[in-house]
Length: 257
Length: 264
Image (cartoon, each protein chain N blue to C red):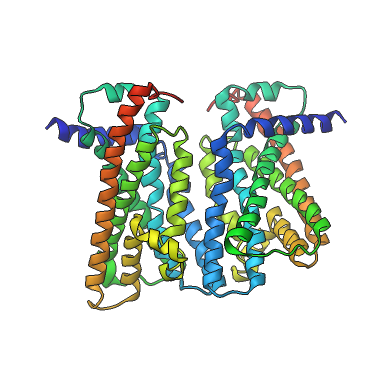
């Protein structure tokens, strides 16, 4: 109960803090729109069917969630270190994972704004109609996708703890995740060796679930796998953070940057 | 002589000191990995859309990627000085502004040229796009001219950075505009009319068109068209450089009046 309260309070606090900058907020929404617009223009110029355009719009809507996550989550611990708050977070009585996971969850939540803005953009500027087949399933699939992307961001942030310029690494994962997870391109177009990698990434299943819910198709398995992968990332991140923190404490390297 | 020292040495020092992306830990993911990932993203999207062949996306995105160092580094020349609290000192010096800021552009042009050159060669190798040997000289020229014109718009961004605090956000928006409008991934003839009308006034549009022409056409028949496109690209880049220099002067004066030079 205490842990759940901690997650709720930390998520809300981080959401408010990270919503303060109008510049960052605007970029979170605008940045994926540039890429979504390019994708829509390409599909339209290629004389593709309306259903392909709708599938592209749904996939493009998730790009912003990952964009909001990749660079900031990768540089999260370095940023805490620079602000001098990393030691305080580590020293708190709650497990480190419970303190940090709500932060990446808040980032993913902010990214979810761009899900809505991309779909509105597609509708208003490009006339792409996404007739939602099952609103209930969509309302289940969307939070599960956001949650799983948040946990993937948490795992990324913990993994990159020893990398001083982790933001650059996170930044470099932006396009590959968009590509491999089938946000804009069907997996069938990609080489076979990419598929197992895509299946290990929760956004792949999240996008499929959203497409299924919006355009009609199976949803349950995609949502379940997406959720399970999100939980797997959370557990792996928690274990990894404990190991890395033990090492940092033993070697007195926590504050080194 | 003093102007030449400021232009060359000042530019080099400022580039090394303020553009914090030169460490291999940043440079490799940002300048080598990301452009290839972007090329692959749009090449596969292009295959799925059935719009153009891979070469079109390799050329467009490789040239566009010169905008990353060119626009971001120029923005950092102001944002970085402000962050280090040296902007007032810099602008209090009697140094002439033209060599001071144009000097900062020179290493950036080289950086942009190298990044897009790498992206072009690596992207072509990965996607098995043939870069014709007879077009090598023209392609090198197109890369250089495009990096120059991107630096022009970068100088405008640097001027705006005197008023806009978030230089990175500003640079991202400029990059996004170039991505959508300049015929990078969508041929100009397939863009909506109003977008196609804006495109010729932006850097990169003519450079990309020249490079794409070099890649697809053989023989000397297309040479006048390529030369014309490169000349226009050079003109557009120079126009942005002049605009950037004027905007820097105006906004510097205004920032002094408002005492807002070091507002973070």
